[in-house]
Length: 290
Image 1 (cartoon, rainbow, N blue to C red):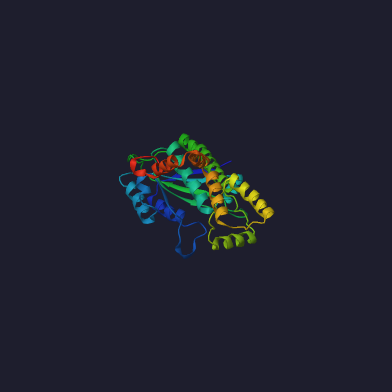
Image 2 (cartoon, one colour; image 1 turned 45 degrees about the vertical axis):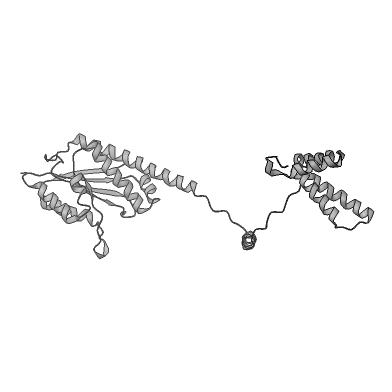
């Protein structure tokens, strides 16, 4: 069960001393360090943690009031919640408590203003136990004197517990999702890395020329015939035949059309054949040259 202590007094000098107390932890900080002061309300948030400005605002707010009232809250958490806070980084835990304080007073005591500091130290035989010291201004944000009824104090207690547990659970889920999305990099054997570096050091080879199935069949069959007939491996006739087969494998329709033209022209009489070949070579007359 969460514990919330609410007290008030009417002494302005005591209020200024309490600002110093909540800014400098109970056990004291070395080298003059102080706790970060956070504001409740626009005027105190504008001080940005400046202790001197906060003390001046509290002193100014007490002027004109015969009996100014300074409310002080000490907001703590239970032991199970403190153990959950211990698993968070210090800055993240302070952020959870800071948001919980702002949401608590905005919802349960709207209009109040003041300062607070987050303490995360423990006590006698007790580990770190986060809690918040809050000091309210004697005036509300609209300038009216501050008055917090017992009913409002009870609402603050209930709202504080809900806000702390809600913010803490939200941060724990974010951390859990972050851990799940962080997949370890796959380990690559050294021999694979070396092979990749060697392959990258050599330029890429030119892709070999592809031949059609007819051309490959002719090469195999022609090589067998050459071996049987004991013919030389290279020659003008063989080179011309290889060129025709290569052309047929790439464009069979064009090769068949040319072969048909040669066959028909060979069957024609010599004068007609010469005239046809002559006309075929005259591209200047707009004839299609195949």
